Length: 416
Ligand code: GLU
Image 1 (cartoon, rainbow, N blue to C red):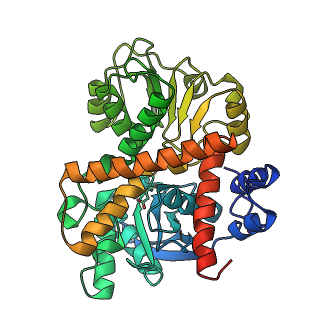
Image 2 (tube, rainbow, N blue to C red; image 1 turned 90 degrees about the vertical axis):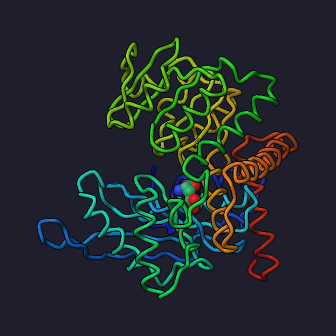
């Protein structure tokens, strides 16, 4: 991800996407300018005690990109490469994602610059608590609602919630979503990012008159989103021919055993018998029907886009296809389901979690998944229709739809 700190634009990447929309007369120059800057950015350097007794200063960020449609919303990422620029881009994408899904939330994102593999559980707990302490004034169930993202999970959310509630002196479960069920989480949240992606993928297959059964799928990234996607797609008769994580790539054109992938990943190291190991670059370029980048940004760029053979790319990660590559894939007739639609299931169930917290009444897994299905189906239909109407890519359609929804709210508020 290329980030331009100097210009105060979100990043050169989102600036490129916005410029392309201007060039195609899909948004105006002044609308582009309006979306080029986040509303609030906080940088914190906070101390936390390590197991050896020493104290280390960590850097963290929280960005509230736009709140016209509701409180800022977005995950907290723990990664050694997290930067202010990256968090800005991800917060920008969250604003668009919530608007595409048409849920009453704005967009935000947080991050802490650490490699979590280097810290013990006790250290991670102290770092999580210290980070929330450092940003506590700007978050709140009516201000900004964090959630999990790369390398954070329900346990981390539970620590953060506990720390925040100590600060406010009362229960406020809705301040954070993606919580474990025992502390006010929602059924279905753990796999909702994957399920939302599977729902929109099925809708696209339906429109293209393709049967799910037998479709060959490659999944890059076997974290929360990628592993649940493998399971859900296999349940629908699709063939997972490739799976990878940060340590390995596994490929077998006749199909991998998904139960074995899930069990080995759960036990600590992704593995499958009868699988070839390819280089990470070759892995993405294999023949397949559906390619699912579910890891980090920039998996598909100008450097490899020409060799991508998939018919459909489902972006379960955030920003895995660069702007230039996206345009080329569209011209080649590849259907790219953009991140802000493809992985919106996570934030949709986060929203449903917040609704349950606010009413203090909790739904069954079936009810949550039905609501997720309804919201994702509507979002897919809106994006699909917009793309057909204007003859533009799904990404451009999703961006235009989202930007117009946010602008409507801004205009009504008298801010634009
Ligand atoms: N981190 C997830 C995302 O990028 C979920 C955010 C949320 O639930 O607020 O969409």
